[in-house]
Length: 241
Image 1 (cartoon, rainbow, N blue to C red):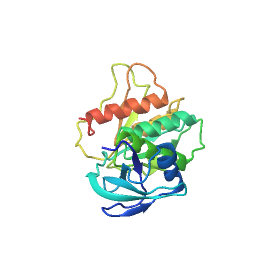
Image 2: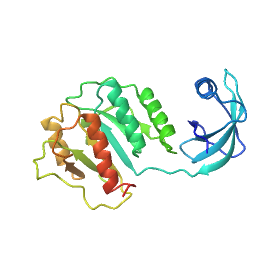
Image 3: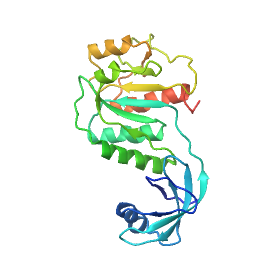
């Protein structure tokens, strides 16, 4: 199978000719050195993965011919990742790994101790697209606009359970995820490098749908905690189990 994969933000179907935007053409024809007749895989996040062929190649754009479907759409579990933005490169890392590990929606949340509040959602969404292209995914999670954690919790849907990563839980008294129905809506919330404030911790603990979980005996960096939490949830309640 072709090794090059490309996300196309439009509905795809067999026999369709798709024009390429300039950045896509530059990647295929200048970076990957592809030419007319070359094969690649494309996906739109809605209809699965398709085999495509370069119909026209030029520096200004070019086009692809969509041929046959190679894989159907595989949606991830109904899992949101809520995280406090940190330094640029590490925030990028969280979005990339959340995409690879099967989060369906990624939400930057502003907490009392959030150190970095400037978030470019368009740039993070582009990182999610690149991660899906590289990991073989057929779905691209939405990166939502930043929201204050207090505002999000004020209107929290009762049916969505929340895995609350709390480093203050005493050793030996760590929480555990419930024996819940697979496919139920969930979210994971990761605090900033300074942790949650006492008010935020109390607010989270007071939610009837929240489950505090301790991620081992060591305090993890925020980006490491995101990967550890996603691994724990996926191996217990997600599509890894």
